[in-house]
Image 1 (cartoon, helix red, strand yellow):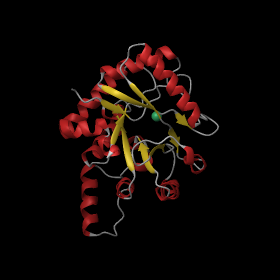
Image 2: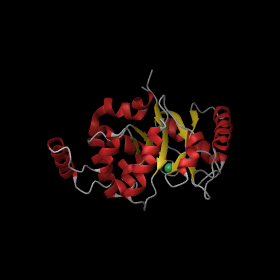
Image 3: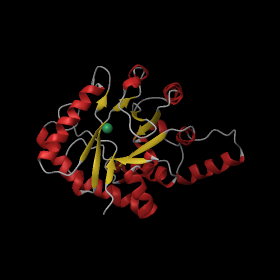
Image 4: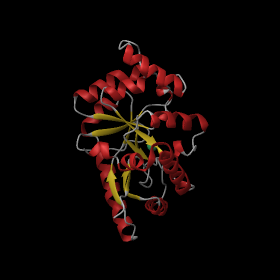
Amino acid sequence: MTTRYTDYHSHLLPGIDDGSGTLEHSLEMARILVDCGFGTVHCTPHRIKGCFDNEPEKVRQGTRQLQRHVHEAGIDLKLVPGTEHYMDEFLVDQAGDALTTGTVPHLLVEVPFAAGKEILPPVVSWMLNRGIVPLFAHPERCNVFEPGCRDAGLMSLLWKRQKQPDMESSLIVSLKESGCRFQGNLGSFAGYYGHEIKQRALLFLRHGVYSCLGSDAHKSERLGQIVSQGIDAIVSVVGDAAALRLLTGEELHR
Ligand SMILES: [Fe+2]
């Protein structure tokens, strides 16, 4: 039997955030993801206070409804309720009842694109101290994770760090070492967000930053093409076996 992939990040639920707007569109997206090899999709609408107040029960209910429609439409796809939590000052109040994934609870968090590094340490420490693992969504799209150097530069940095433990490492390496996990967007590897983000995603991929992947699908247009190109790019860099581990999110379910 062919192993089917898990999409850890999608905006598949209709009418709940800036993703799919209608049930029909959601079903079309679901069909495309199945055609791309997915057997499970985490429905992770934005949760941004005052903008998208998607509380857990609303997401659970929306996922149950869409699952029923998916089943009735004959689409072989399992849906899992989740959330893409905005990493701001409100997260601490909301994380207690948040929809997590994995045997050890992982919470998908999005760093605001314009955020500075200073927002991360207190929130990350708070989460880890409560046994919640931050699963950072698409770090390659967040400027806060820019390693500040090209591929060779990062390798050099890592090497020097081994020799000089006190040397400041890149933020993403430090967070990974402290227990955080990272979800890559398939579209990033396909170049959907531009050349620079693609290069950053490939850099992170080569350095083993990612634990799982997601479509971050908001709409059906070009979805199949973007996801397929992203998977092909990942396979070409790390090979079939490692790509499969990422596409199944094996590490999060140990
Ligand atoms: Fe997203």
